Picture 1: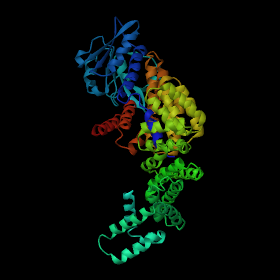
Picture 2: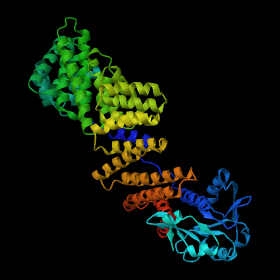
Picture 3: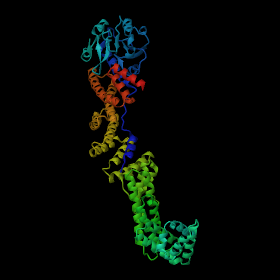
Picture 4: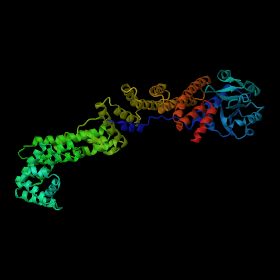
Length: 175
Length: 427
């Protein structure tokens, strides 16, 4: 007896195709990775003056990472101080007491202006486009054989009077 | 009566020798008339003459015709034999003759054997004649013979249906089985379970699922056992939300047919539908023991492991099992699109799950996090060849392209990411 038809009907009922968790939300995974790193930079870096009142993380332009960063801000503190996440539409808006400025890949064109605007301040500028570490970004997310890691521009970091724990060197790529 | 004779006259117009040989009283008149008359009214006159002669000796004439039909049958003159017996059973003198009706049944059965094109209707006449014989045969002279004729006809109907099924001519199955399915006769009872099943099966193949189910159910009630009946019943009960009875039919069917692959698949689908994934896992394990290379079963197993993984994200053993079943399919058929896609997505999903899990704990040790990312990138990179293969096999598969886009994005390969993005936009 030919019973292929029925078998097919049953298979269609359940569908043997598995679904990707996030085909339309793939940036979320990378945002989560960047957010974990950005939060941990607050723990592994030392700023010249102690954090007062709030720890400010700024993002250049509107970006989906804000959602993840706000989740951190809602639940975590830095040295007992709340985290404030801010969006800057241009480098001139960057707060004088901002601790970290993140430049998303899509907004990488802001790098030189951000570096100029924060040149004399202990602001950790973090970008995420290959080559921007060489271009003066203090930390730059890159992929190393598919793995997301970051380049460390030691010279630029020292120029901002920032210090960081040696563990970062073990996992990052020192320029 | 007159119509019957007239018809006979017309039929015999081209076979006068039949009359000449077997109705000697008429023969001389026919010959004589044939010689003297060549006009257009010849047939009418002939018929009238025959009628007149036979009306004078009706009993003798019709009894002669019954005997003559028998003689013709013995001589292999089936058509003529039929003509004779048809007249005989119409005539008042032999209309209640059990012998005549029995003979008619037999003659029509013989005709059905010879004339495949009209076998069905001939067989039908054979059955009705035999039934009539049984009704009027007060001496029970022909009971056994008539019963044999009826069962022979039913067997022939059933064989015709089976032949049609084997040739996948499903539309031909239904009329072949109709005499059995619609009969309430005692002799049909023995054939009804099988006939119901074949009737239902043919309807299923003709996409008349609701009708099919009714006949398959009747087959089951009549005592016919086949795993397909349980499959269809289970499916119907799932669709109509009768889950308890679906489970009952499954357990009955599986007990009767423990190694039936399709019924096993039905059970797996039911358990999936009920989200009983733990039970489904046990069931699929048994299924794969019996059918280790059944691609559909392996795909289903992969889906079950995926479901278990989504509820038990930390249990990587399901990911390993899932990977194994897809790899097994790709051993059987490296170009299996679904298996390539599912394996690629399984790797991708695992990477995403690990990141999601780590992201719940922002204070994760950064070295540990780095190690976890190494595993994730390994998973994303492992997904690539399978998703690329899907794209190579079917470059319009949007899901594969979206997955590729996700993988390239998450390994920071923006050049390839943009390339895939462009392809997607074109689609």
